Image 1: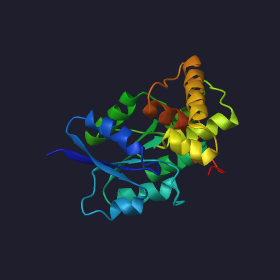
Image 2 (image 1 turned 45 degrees about the vertical axis):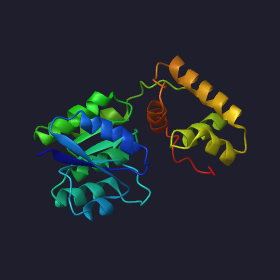
Image 3 (image 1 turned 180 degrees about the vertical axis):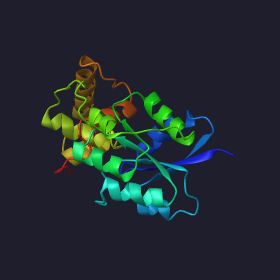
Image 4 (image 1 turned 90 degrees about the vertical axis):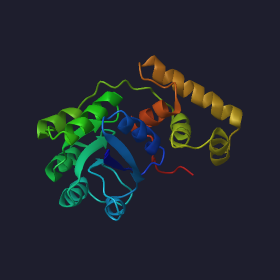
Length: 213
């Protein structure tokens, strides 16, 4: 019987990304996405492994979330967009079995999940610190307006919805999206699909920016 892997993340579109990842893990199945640890623990069937985002709108700390999952017998792989060293160290203290940055190749998350399921995952404070201080990602140089468009478009809104929310035309939104893709391509970062743009938005801290309608 396939072993269940669940996910805790605020962004619904992440369900598509993680379902594809888990499908590549032998002997595993994706149980679904929830927005909080409490919601996951309230399910009738609990997963064997949880993929956890460090920043959740409910305001709980990574350490608290990891401790709650561990107490329920659930191993945790932290999947982070590169938060502060403090948060990463908090995840380590909480007992995360693995930490993978969202800018890393998908195969890194697949391998981390395989390792946890096979009981061979190891994590140290040094590993967390090295992930947090990795500055190799190229800056795409998006303008404030481009960041607004990306925040909405990458989070699942259609071009029509983005246009309505920002008070601009659909044609203008299309132009912004095209330029955003070009800027990421120029610095060697994939942007050909909406999943790619979602990942870029996570890496650059674009999703969840204050002030968006």
